[in-house]
Image (cartoon, rainbow, N blue to C red; front, top):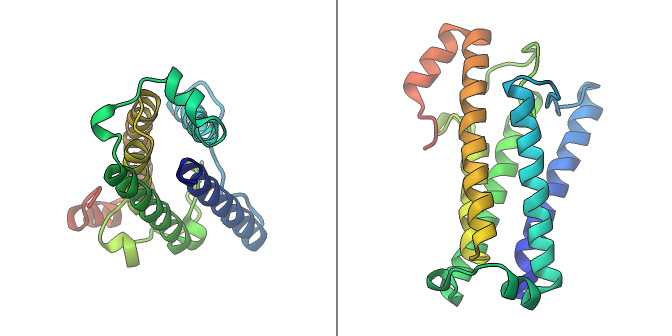
Length: 197
């Protein structure tokens, strides 16, 4: 049962994100998914994000379906391979996934996956966004750390590090976009609320 929990948590968060995207599309008539496919930095970041998420899903599903085979073929990290770390990892995955979902919901129609060409929604600075400029990414990173603890192997670490680098880069691109779109209002927000926590 334990081997399936990380995959179940990842699938639940993925399905809830998909459901929210469909709801936002239905409400506004536009898709919140605005990842680009170009040859620029945004296009590369979008492709990298999709590859990392797909690899993480496949990795967790493989562990759920073939735990012994995956354990034998992938370098495990013995110091983290304990029931306590596994339990802490599952809790972090659940809390991180929950924070990600709540943060996406709190943005209402401002929530996008990617950077829109035209900023057509207000800047969100209240609720969870009064404590962190990026609570969605804080939740994602918490879930990634949880994944490493719940499934302590080389692939989990590599995917978590790749995702963290990708998220950090995405944040910088989003900050540049929001500074252009909202000017002084975004600058004041950045001075009063930290990037992470």
